[in-house]
Length: 364
Image (cartoon, rainbow, N blue to C red):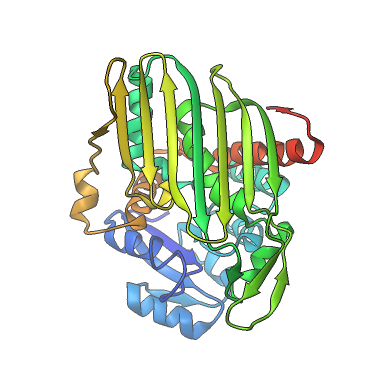
């Protein structure tokens, strides 16, 4: 590895749409400890356009060539979930540190294989659970640890997103549950990770995972698509701390409601709200101590360095992830969250699926 900035290659770097131009590409371009060395898309013209827009030195349309290039230190995998396994394994086998978007794989088995290979190769990894860098969620976690609510008795999380009836044709591939990219794995995975990262893991869980809308209308083609992916996830259980917890996350036909996480303890209450999802930033935190008659907003501040970079929206949390990843690679220290953290979240999802399918509470 060369001295100086870490040299990054991004797979899935379309310059005009998708997650990369909203987050990874502007974040990497702004962070001085990284150099956006290469971008890769399925078509050379798109890769060339991305390289020009974000200042990358190289553009590829074959990820195999990019991951083996000697001038790449770190690979970012920012593509559809079914491709995560193939691309991440290729990068790891090429000896590169890897940042892969969530979910890590289309299954628990794939995720375990990727995590095991990274450890055997002695490589650093990061999983894109960027909600862990939300200023409001971090402050909530700090307050719980400091005893603001005292002993946690119960907690609940709800999130309802509108728009389950229709999709454009470039997104209806998610109708197949086997693709591993759906309400349970992606949206619920991000949301429940915020709960678990704040309060600890589940010891036992019961669940209902349901497909309430079994057909989507493709708005640009007029076709009707059969759906097997779930759109409602309800869980209840007990955390390892002894607190009870529940969650209901759904995609609903029309207007949904905000994300909300509520924590109730013997000494106080904390409530976090967000208009879309905690991984996107812009959350608000409220609290009340015993004896208060109403919730009051609790100030949460972004680090000064992130505001100085001029980044906004989801790119802020992703930039924080990259800065921590870079420090871990440079210093040989642990990464949070890494592929092992992803495996833990995939294990919870697998337990939720089994609990729903069998009607039997699962122990983790």
